[in-house]
Image (cartoon, rainbow, N blue to C red):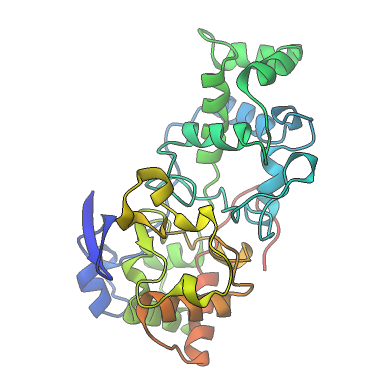
Length: 329
């Protein structure tokens, strides 16, 4: 995977066709489009995925049996909880906005600071976090092993290993890999169905490219494949009028490198119409506010209200379909 320079920062996971895409409008040739058709994760075992779905909704994965993965990631509503921060065991509040669990198949890493490089690693974070599920593997295994039906499901899914921390993590990870919302209007347009986008949605896509938003939001997930500073063209944290928190440090908490201060994984926009509030700090309540904020602090521009409306319409075209996704804006 190549790298991309933008906004004075070296960003990982760039794409070699970004330059030409920034100059053009929606072209007929899908090869040059910076947004790509979203594809499912290939080769998943249905039995393991089904087991992972059971675990995703199992509150025994938390210390007091009150919180499941689905508690903070409501699959019917877009894969997040639409709260500024999530509520964990004993009513404890988290420290950062929960992202969606849909369409993770092309992400470069997981969590806002990118500290997990695989979905199996991602599972460890909430499970052990004292504000979220607050447990550990011996406690989880002790509870689940008492459930003969669950133990039998693990023996069938993993004949040589049965139920272990690794197989629990694998089942949950494979279930999340299955959460790909396909066949969006944008995907159909990219495949050649030119009537799939309305005039406003197509105009919004062109504006999205021409303003330069596409430099960080591209690929299958329209984001998720690189890191960027929050506040390339302005002092976002200084203007925010809110005390800095450890979560605001971003990648710095992972690398310890000063250049990674306030650097975050770029979020995917595929589910953005369903996952308000926005940004790691939930500082934007609406898409209109989020678009204007990104324009100001990442691009150094003010976008007219009519262009913001068109870009928002384009965001709606990114929303695909999944059997578990029922609620739409």
